[in-house]
Amino acid sequence: MADFVQKTITKTAVRNLTTPIANATAFAAIPASVISTNPFGCTSYEVGGVTFDPVTKTRESYGTRILYQDDDGKTTGTLSVRAPSTAAFATMKSEILGDAEMTAAMGGDPVNDAERETYSLTLKCHDPSGETYFVTFTRDLVRVSSYEDDSILALVEAWADTVPALA
Image 1 (tube, helix red, strand yellow):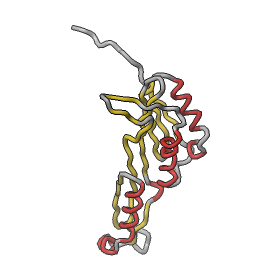
Image 2 (image 1 turned 90 degrees about the vertical axis):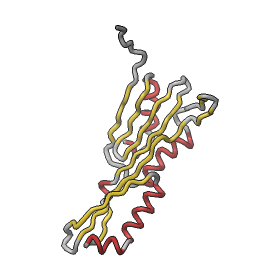
Image 3 (image 1 turned 180 degrees about the horizontal axis):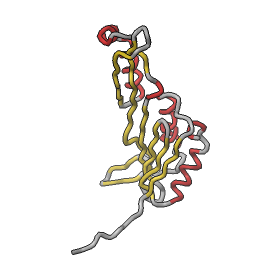
Image 4 (image 1 turned 135 degrees about the vertical axis):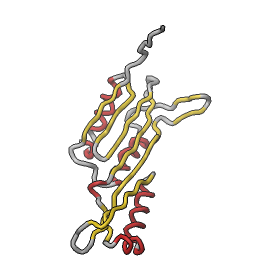
């Protein structure tokens, strides 16, 4: 029987942030700046006759939890929301927090549990060497994955050092 032969060594590195990113707007600005300024020097590439941008979003998600509290501050119910964009996230929170029928049904006033909000966005990057790797941002970490060449990690790390929110 034939053996499997390792062909590549892909790596993952994680930077845990000292302070979670404050809100969804501040969070979304970070990967948006990567897409618009291309600080990693990524290049366009072609697959099957289709040209792809140097840096593209592959996944995006924003979540929060709304608590309903009675006059004594006791939680009477909760509602979790997950949205595909910051615009949808803001709309959903606003609609839920302002919905009188839901408030009455839950038996308490709605409060956004901002400390438990979650944000996640993954970028697919194409290095000039031809290597494709991913940079994932969450509220409390940055992950570089599926890279082989350590110079890619060094490049992302040097950029992250210039972004105060990624300390």
